[in-house]
Image (tube, rainbow, N blue to C red):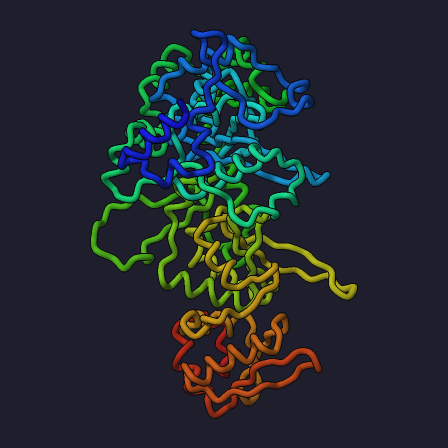
Length: 529
C-alpha cells in the first residue's frame, strides 16, 4: 500500500520525485495510528522520556483523538501567529542537555489570544514579564507537547512555517526529536539539517496554498481571526473572571497576581495611562544630565503628530522612540537603517562602540560610552540614533587603577538590522576591521571614528586603535591613503599598540572631509580651536 501511495505521489507535479524520495516522506503517513478499525489518533514523534511524562500529564487516547477535530483553519492561523510572534527555543541547559520549547510572545493587552489558544489545545503555561512600560505575556509549550500534539498536527494537515527563521528552528527541532539527541554538543555531528517541507517557488504557488489565507491572518493581524473575536466577546478579560478561572493557567504565582493588579488598576483608576506616562517622564528626568537641564518635560516623549506631507529624504524625519516599550518581532523586522545613520553606527563601532546581546541567538544592541568631558558628543549621537533607543543616556561609574571614573552611556534596542554589523565586525566575539572597509568608511564614519578615537596633536592627528591587531590597522590606513589621499604612517604607542598618524600636511584635506559631520566641541581634535 505504501508503494502504491508513493507511486501516485510521484505522478503529481506538485509533489514530484524530490519529495517522494525525501528521507522524511514516511512522516507524511506516520502521523496517524489506528486503534482498532475506526479510531485514528495522532502518533507521537520521537521518544518521550519517562521523566517528562512524570512532570506533566500523559495524553490519554481520547484526548489525542479529539485533537484531530481541531479545525484546519485554526492550525493555519496558529502557524501564522508563531511565524510572526513566536519561536521554537532550542537552548543548552547548565548540564549540557538540549531544552526545546515553543513560545508565543504578545503584549499583555493581548493575553486573551493566548488564553484562546490554550482553550483549544489545553496544553502550555502562561508567563508574564513584568515591565511597567510594556508588560508582555508568553504561552510556553513544552517539548513533550510538541512531540505529541503540535508537530503531529502540522504533519497531518501538511501545514508548515513560511518564514526562514521559523523553518530553520522547526527543522532543527525535528532533527533532534527524530534522532533522540540528548546532549547539545551532539547537534554539531550533523553537518546539514534536512528540510522537512518544501517551500513554493513562486508568488502564485504561495497564494494557492490551502492554508495561506488563514496563515496570513495570524501573521499580520491575529485579532481579526473570527473565532478569536467570538471567544473574546464570550469571555472578556476582567478582574473577576481572571481571579476565578485563570489561576491554574500560569506557570508561577507572581504572573497571576501581576495580571490581577494590572486589571484592577485599569478598572479602579481612569487615569491609569496618565500615571504610566508620568512614570516614564520621571524616569527620563532621573537619568538626564546637565546637558539637557534646560529642557522642561511637560509631556512624555512620544512621536510628534505628523501634519505635513512634503517629500523628505529617507531618515530625516525619524522621531525618538524613547518610552515606547518593547517592539514586536514584526516591527523589529521592519526597522531599517538609512544611509546616514548606518555610517554613524559604522564609525562608532570602529571606535568606542560595541555590539552586545545577552544570548548568541538574540538581536544585538549598540552600546556607546564616553567620559563626562565628552558628554555632549554622547547626546549628539543620541540625537541621531534616538529612533532606535528605548531610553535616554544615563551616567555610569567605574573604577580603573584605583580611581573612580564617571561616564555617560547609551545603548539601542536589540534589532535584527544590527546583525549585519555583528557579522562584519566580530569573529569569535573579537572586534576586527572588515575586509570591505574601503566601501564602509564614508566621510561620516570617518568623522565619528576621529571623534571617538582621534587624539589631536600639535602637528597632525593620532587615531588610537589599541584594540585592533597590526593587520587590521594597516588595512584601515591603506583606505585612508588610497580613498582619501591622506599622508599616513604608523606610530607605536607601546611595542604592541600601533596607531595611525595623519601628518600635518594632510590636515587641511582631512578637515574639509569631516568637519561638516563633527560636533563643535570635537573640533580641537582636527586642530580647530
